[in-house]
Amino acid sequence: MLITRKLEFDAGHRISTHNSQCRHLHGHRYVIEITLSGNIISEKGVAQQGMVMDFSEVKRIAKSALVDKWDHAFLVYSGDAPVMEFLQSLKDHKTVVLDVQPTAENLAVIAFGILDEAYQDIYGNHLQLEQVRLFETPNCWADAIRGAH
Ligand SMILES: Nc1nc2c(c(=O)[nH]1)N=C([C@H](O)[C@H](O)COP(=O)(O)OP(=O)(O)OP(=O)(O)O)CN2
Ligand SMILES: [Zn+2]
Image 1 (spheres, rainbow, N blue to C red):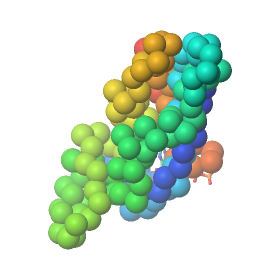
Image 2: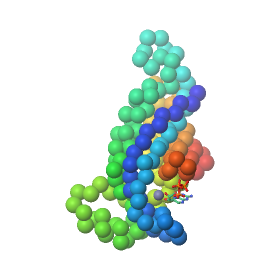
Image 3: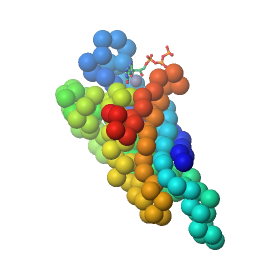
Image 4: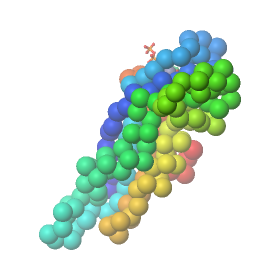
């Protein structure tokens, strides 16, 4: 069985090597869709009966591991020297430094790695992360899929 939980966050970025408008500082309302696989819990009387994982628990884990860290942050490539220098000059600025360009593809792969650690098979129903879909705009998204990125 697959279940998917959607969350949203705002973040700034730029793609410093881009040959068009994406090299300018700008932001997005990112949408992340987290897909988990697992067996439906059949144990009678437990709070998770009939579920793979409670959607509220999927959300709580995603916020704690990733979304609250990226929300209202600037996602910057460590190789983007001028923007790194600028952000470091701002006191207490919420900055997330990445070792790759903050494209939708790279963000999806990074998010997958973080969330894969965060979702554990705590109910013994073989719960695991299968896919992270990251929308950069309503028209543009990237999928990081287990075993295929
Ligand atoms: N393969 C990728 N291509 C692009 C990425 C990316 O992450 N991966 N990112 C960008 C820009 O950051 C930009 O945010 C996307 O802009 P754009 O193509 O203009 O997307 P829109 O949905 O805003 O475009 P509409 O024309 O309004 O549909 C660029 N490329
Ligand atoms: Zn962008």
